[in-house]
Image 1 (tube, rainbow, N blue to C red):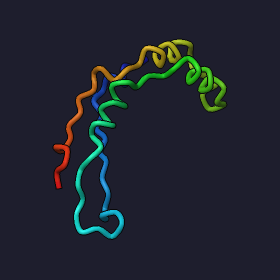
Image 2: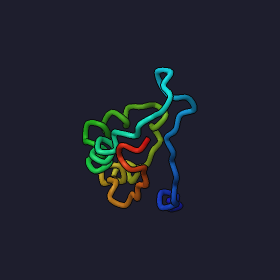
Image 3: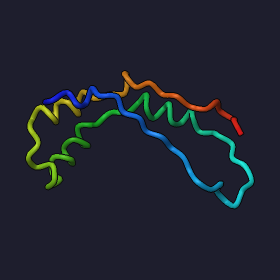
Length: 85
């Protein structure tokens, strides 16, 4: 209603310690992230389930229509180069 969905957002993924007591970390998996983002959408079944969640019981019909049409086509993703140490 107030166009907040058009405001820029920033999300970061990080960790404080190397996993498995490692000395260094290799960045990998960007391809999987890109596939997920490229194919993201809410299915009719997803939306039907969300409509049964009590916390979402008062959502307006326009919200469900928004979710049905939501995709990630306007996302800008910045990432390290695959294989970076």
